[in-house]
Image (cartoon, rainbow, N blue to C red):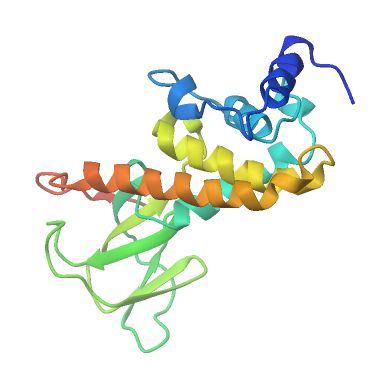
Length: 219
């Protein structure tokens, strides 16, 4: 394989010393620092004991190509505080499926969590259905709370970044002879990392409903 200087040596040394996985996680290495895609991808490669990359276009095993899909999968799986958005939707299209109103789903929306006619985030929710880029319901106006597509690691908590890196490692591992046998163990670690990120997020969520109207009009 290609040499990548000291980065390659660092990953190999940790792995050969007998650690089943590199002992540090992103929560250790990047506390208080901005993260980027390359640091998350390199964390995944290190968990596999594979050589690290010097640039995004220098990654092997499809790591860079898998980054968005893995991230979106984890974002959809929980109502993360850092990815939650509030929007007053714009009417668009013709109502279908027995509903009386049709709205445009925000461009960055991965998952609609709830909709309500009132601007108070504690007001009663309404029934809705999403098909493609349209949301159907029986309320007007329509204030939606949703999970946004947040793909920039600089906006993530460190434990979510570690969950993404560990899940990415689990997908990369079977593609290399060096890490082929680590796939099952990494999947277990990925689940644990996800649960830890969820627990931290849930602790932060208590009493964090915004004061006044949190909804922003979108077109």
